Amino acid sequence: MFDPFGDFETAGYLRNTYAEKDLEIVKAAEHNLFRAQLPTALAFLADCQRIEYGDFLEVHRLLFEALYPSWAGKDRAEVLPERAITKGSVFFCHPRDCRLAIEDGLRHGHDAQQMMKRPGFIMGMFAYGHPFLDGNGRAMLLVHAELCFRAGMSIDWTKTNKLPYLTALTAEIESPNSGHLDQYLKQFVAPQIPRNQWLMTVGEMPGLDGVDQPADEAAQYDDPSVARDYREFESRRGYQLR
Image (cartoon, rainbow, N blue to C red; front, side, top):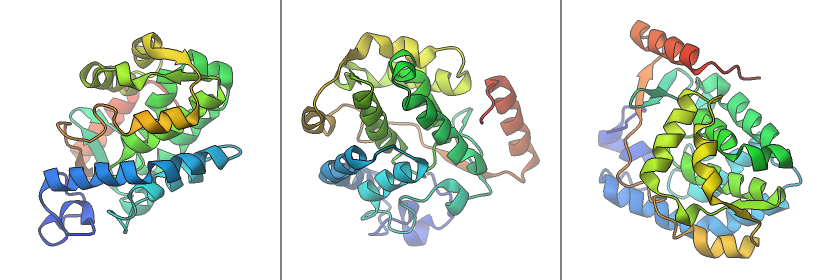
């Protein structure tokens, strides 16, 4: 059980509003809330002249604040600055670098040619940044879709398959210069679609409910073995945030 706050028994999963401990119930509540708040979040993004880091955080707050009021829309640098978050053998960035990773993805994403050429790389930067304790995939998907729209294209996510996508995404995080996710996504690149069409389809997309996905884990960076493993992962990754 992912319990980064260490208070699961009293506050439930990630301090949710209902102190609920049953993960199936929490995930169902997450997805229902996501679908309910989707129009608000998409309208917010459409009104952003240029999507910045604070807007990325605001999308998450709009989607999930009703379920996670104490931390929705706040990044790990604010919520858990000393904890490493991992999924299996994959490390997400250090909390102090969440903003750098997301801003790197946004910088490339605002360039239409880069967006068309490297949609997987941009999604990988968002995934590596992993600023939130939950709901990262849904928040970054909406931002990515808006950036695609502005670049005059779309990704037909309804035709993707969760397992090969997650496999490619994991490889992308581990080696962002190798084009793993770009290679997977290129078969799903399509012409631009109207925002209202996106609104009608995204809530039903497969894999967005967060069920049957490996759980994150949290550990202290001051644990020597954790710090060592993180440095080794970063070294293998071979990408300098800027």
